[in-house]
Image (tube, rainbow, N blue to C red; front, side, top):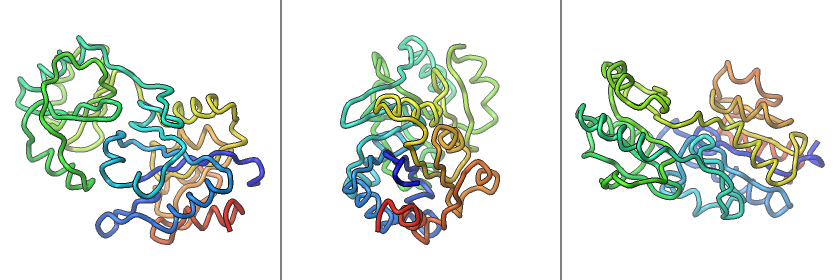
Length: 264
């Protein structure tokens, strides 16, 4: 099996980063991924996190991936070159910011390598950033920012109908948490990002292995031949994978790479 594989796509949270008791990286699996790189396999991180978040949690200090699919496919970088990114139309973005501020909320705005808040932080910001063990981005002027990939609105569900009715119609609104809403100009799907990477590298599904654990990883599994759901993954995600790995706290990525004879 491993003779066909050329690229390994790896989710971060609950795949190589364990949140069971704090926020602990699976160092053994990260070292295993580095060993796979030394054996000629490309390693591409594939995450819902923006680039700045991945950088901030220190993962790039442990491994230099051959590429990354960040913001669920909103930004794709291979060998330090951006091969794809979404851009929110400036007029729509500025109107969105005006609506958010008028209703007394704030929002995180994601650029390729940076992110910022448009208004002072709230308790919702503190809660979500503590959950993901990150530093809160700086407060910046949103006007004239024409490189926005996505936004994260910090609000409660009671405001959804009003805000959705006031923001530009070309923006999509996805609530993923009682205090968090993703706002984008087009759907960000991990699977689309995986396909773009394979096309760019002139590879196909037979050459790809992917590790994940959650609903967002299903589309990634559909674009590769060898899909691995972590043992700690959602039970309704596991049927979409061809392999079930041990959980993250048992270094499931490393064990699977050994089983596939990608590493020793």
